[in-house]
Image (tube, rainbow, N blue to C red; front, side, top):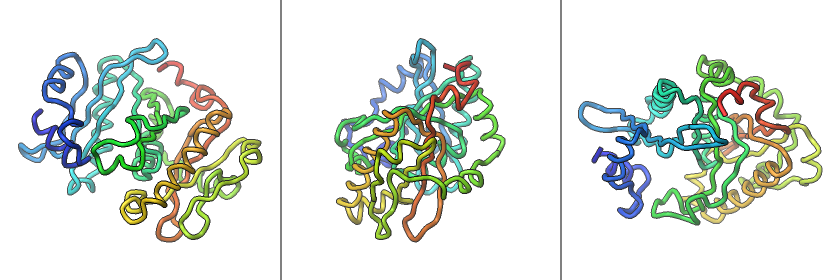
Length: 275
């Protein structure tokens, strides 16, 4: 458990004040929270931490942290840790899991929507405050709050490898993006009223926001503010985030979120068995 502190600092660059204290780690585990580690011999190279919570009157697990050492990130350990979390939660008769992630992180978006089958209808501005001690949290800490109905047909299909990428790529050219690349790597906004008349809309993001944050913080901030506007306006208007697809268009671009008009319960009919 002590190795968790070291790994947190290595992956997120957190100061001591923002690292989860060992006493809290031990207490959370003993109280029923889910702690899972990936080891190379005696060395912790990845972990996932989820604690028990309540949403809509139903017991669920909130997956608060998932980290993998940089040199082990080509082994699909993040995906395997999520599957292990799912197995552990289902064995506890809990079939719902939530977590948050930065919607500008395309790699995480691909894992969450494309491979795991989450959905989202909640966007949280500065979830952890304007910034933390982590270098990864300097461009605000906006988050999508995602829901993972682990026993649903949608999730089971994704885990069986039923990829939606081809279907989404067919749909995207017919959509009106609320945010799109303007040709020089900057976000361009679409007329809101026109976009919101559609049944489906899209939001484009860069393929590597971390690189942009390092090279051009002002441009990274433009992407944050533009996508914050797009997500909050779309969700307020009755859309939810249904899919994410990575595409290739030049060096940076873009990944695309697909948003559907309606309620999550209609899109994932068996989600009510979870929530």
